[in-house]
Image: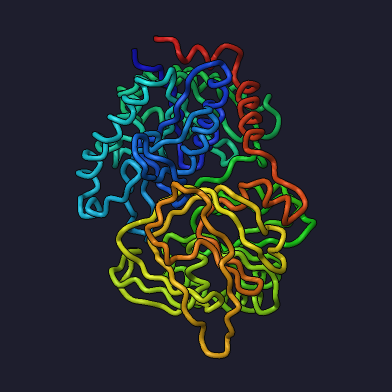
Length: 500
């Protein structure tokens, strides 16, 4: 018998679907159910690497579904997010299907492509329902986008295929929540309306008594009750999926600034620093970046475009000055490529014009983009490091690589000097050495370049560098589950599993 399904729909993007779906994954798992998350198509440059079942290869899925799987106490896998769109420009996204890039799909029209992708997504959904007791589905945007209704397989088709009991979420902090709920319910596919079991008012703050008679009037108009009022949770501990993260809550400690160029990716990996004794911020302002004690160049989905942006906005000078002053600079993946001597993209892999650019020349690396993407998940060991990075010497970390660039050691421009040394090596024997010439990590002075993502998600790293470690993700999952348990009436969430 196929698993039951609960689906979280939203009136808008950013209504809180992802974290509520994550909370439900943990809540239902705590009831002893085998739970799997599912989102037919996600659009995000925050991705994680997972092992493809039955193969010694890796694929990528959206970070939200990765964390939802962990919350569900399940092994993350590509079926949980069969289609991932990774924006490269305002009009172009890389299409990842079952964990692997499919460049040929860029030439297929949106509506025709959706029909093709739904076949894959439907198979993935059905296979999960065959193996689990419950699938918690997450929608995308809104099910009331009437211009896209004919090709909306992320909301309507997924909900209908799974016969899902649906919750419709509105962000009441934005204002207009009752109108959002009423309008979304009115405009959604009429086949979907009977499956909407309740409205959820999310991010509420203030006097709950002021909500009346809104929920009662809304139920009179739609026949759907408001089943939960969820309070504003500013520091719930779950990484942001798409938006540039907010600054950390701490004001004391060293100022750690993450440089947020327009195509910065995988910013969710810095979430553990929020609970560390550092003043964490994410910035595009050259003056704020110049005042950092620790600076981070994160990954990028369009490295050359971000490099050009750094130069156009004077941020490159602030980064060079930071390194010249001997202050610690961490350059991760695309950031490591930007910190190198040159970036060559002869095939226009990143979605822009083919060509090459000079890097910031902080690391003796030259990078060339090739069609084959490298996806790896492994354990890495740091070598003997120097300066501010010395506490990491000998530490092993779990990390993951998502990149198309291959880098090699080169000489720095005349007079720049080159005291760079290999900073880390892969210690996982299953890591395929498909580009042995590319260093996993490299240190030159105060600059540490690192290809693997996920450094600060290793508690030992945060403890070694800053004397404490962030809140474990497991605790965040438990807090979220506790919150939905308090926000819904007793018995309601289990009633969603009953056939109507």
